[in-house]
Structure formats: C-alpha cells, structure tokens
Amino acid sequence: MLSPKLKDIYKAVANLLHERDSLQPSEISRFDDEVLGATGQLLEGLQQRQLRDIPVQQRDPIPKKKFRKKNLHGKANARTLTAAEIGEQDLQRRERNEKKTAAKYAKFALG
Image (cartoon, rainbow, N blue to C red; front, side):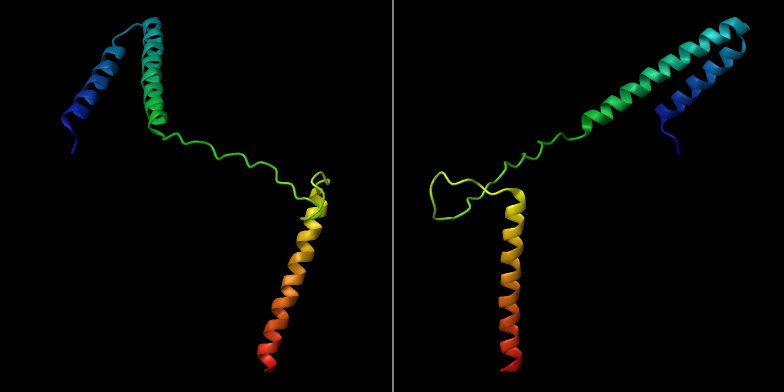
C-alpha cells in the first residue's frame, strides 16, 4: 500500500508527463533538460544526506619507529640495530624458545 505522499508524487510525475506530451518538439527538449536537472539536484541532495549520516572516526595513530640498542647494558650512545639485525635476533630468540619448549615436552613424554 502506498502512502498518501507517495501517491501525490506519482500524480505529480504523471501530470508532468501528460503536460510534456502537449508541448512542441523544441519545448519538449527544454522541458526534458529542466526535469533532468531538477532530478539530478534532488539526487545530489539525497547523496549528501547519506554521506552526512556516515560516522567520522579518528584515524589510527601512526606507530613510531622503535629502535633497539645492540646491548641492553652497554654504552648510552651505542648505535641502534638495523631492521635486518633486529629480525635476525628475533629469529634466533624464537628458535631458542622453541628448543626449550621442545626439550620440556620431551622430558614429560619420557618421564
């Protein structure tokens, strides 16, 4: 079932089309341009309202680069490690931890 306002809109569009048929060919072209312009403006307004309803959130903060010292307990002005060196140290640390956990599970399995 259509709402009363929607019925009014359909009637208005039907009246526009009926009046369009009674115009001269040159007037029909101008009339069509006006109708298309008006509907374009209405659609733009709808799109702007939809964009206004989208919530705007703060961007995620950009993480700062973190550097590690070569030695934790060394000179205060010791150079920092490159990304490759950090990756290599992390890999070695991970492998050591995996060996330790494998050794623990081996003890439980045997004992």
